[in-house]
Image (tube, rainbow, N blue to C red; front, side):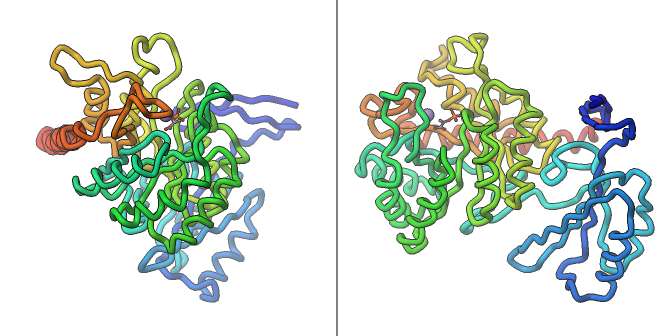
Length: 400
Ligand code: PEP
Ligand code: MN
């Protein structure tokens, strides 16, 4: 057994080989023209050409959009010596992208113009826009869920967070109402026009429970499956969430692993077939962040946007974890939110509660419904500042 460190595009990879035949694994993506038919003669010619290539694994993926079907063919193996021009000369080929680093599907590769957005239940999630998903860390009562979603609707929000399955540090803490609360949560969401609810799952069985409850509600709303920081490397859960393509996934960064490890976790979802993935920064577990609950890591917003095509979410509640205010009387949670938004974050997942002192989970970090309009306006201000910063960069030319 031989372990080799090699470098591709400035990143180090280990490869384990059982013999001395050392060849770096690389990949290539062939993007076909929209709506290419599998019966098309040129498609068949391309496929028989590719099948003849030595030491290359072929993986075909169809992306069904609202208007068209996009087919991508992944070549994995010894692609370095492949003749790109030859492949591009097939009439069905739109373009060829050489994959320069890991995160083959979700990664942003050089010359890669593929879209970095997806639509779910009428809401577009992408690297170019911003949504807020405010709500209950854990659903405790129907009344609180109703008050929360009513307040969101009054302020023009179509997304919410509503925790049903809660991973808790202590087995004696409230574990969430689980599937029992799904019927009323979905019904209330439908009533208040909430289209997407972020909801953590901790077991693959929860996916079926959510599907069943959504069906029973007559499709009243939609769910974005949340995979929490304690499960970032629960590979079986990732595979299960990746195998289904109906519900998008919000993956939290692991709180004690490297960014690269967390991005690979996201790639698990995509490699199983689900590319509708949002990546969420939520702070790192270390006492260096004291007095905050975690060390805020929102400086990585531009890093994740650069390395991948995923929309980037920030979770200021679980990062900061306390409601304390600065001398300007602005809560640290709101300062941290704006720090992420001014760097181009695309989603804000944040805890609110109608009565934080009565919340069963994470009350000390919840903002109140009275603070909701202030919070939303503050976020808009930071977003406008971000857009002005992009404009300013345009006037000064782009940095390399
Ligand atoms: C949550 O968002 O409710 C949560 C438990 O977050 P995390 O996985 O980031 O701790
Ligand atoms: Mn929480």
